[in-house]
Image 1: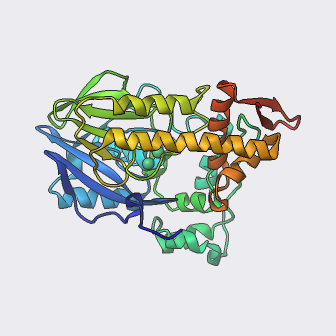
Image 2: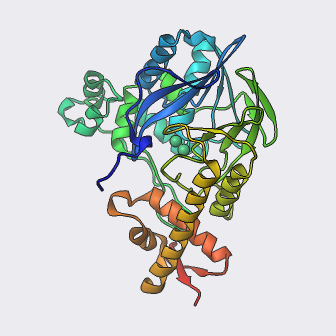
Length: 382
Ligand SMILES: [Zn+2]
Ligand SMILES: [Zn+2]
């Protein structure tokens, strides 16, 4: 696809920038599909600073965060609080390490649960072993090129660690629609071998110190922020609203040009309905003048952006019904492969497709049945 580069994809800025009175933004590089950086917001008060979403857990991301804080005159030991908007590693990843090194309190939603908390203990043990248990090997040339180019692992270290033997394959993860769920890939596991223990623990074991609920007020950076529980992208997503000055820290809930992934695995019967209700809810908040998203630039027209996002999902639902007309009865994977471009195929596309199909089923526009092999099939209602 040609055209303008979406702002969420832009490389991380080198220096902190004040994006609202008393609110600094630091950008930390990430390399995920469609994303070039994550925004970490810095809220200063008399005790030090609170960070909202401190980026990925790997040592290079942490070093980048600490260097950019220092560049803004803030030593990392002044970070007294880390608020995490939701349980994705590019948002919560840096929190555990800041707590371990500087005693920062980690704050997240009452239902906060990382993808690793959700794993059966056997799977978590396998994951720990895969990133920990190094055996002797002698083939350092096997390091995948994309891992070296990712910038998230020291190339020399990766060669040494990768050379210690093959990375074990993790057990498959079942999904409600009968396909395999997402699991970290070989390159990601190999990269984790090159991390120190603090980073690994920060990713695999993060329990918040304080759990907050919808409607609660948290005081950070000399402002009283109202917690808005905004499920859909994950079940535990929160936004923070400063009603006095009309500032919304929107996390991944409302982004300037891309629509957040809707997970079919939040545990809710209808994650898409949850999401649409939650975006409409923030759009209806009076007086929001500045939206500070977790990726991309600040923006002002929150209701306008929310209408675009809702329209996008309405189109996707209609598209799925058209796909169903053409396919007859089909699995979630078959729907996903029509709905998404090939480069996006996989567990995440299937999870979002499942969320949309379940929304249609609950609205009486699709029927679902078990295909016998454990896979669900969906058929449009004529
Ligand atoms: Zn996210
Ligand atoms: Zn994100």
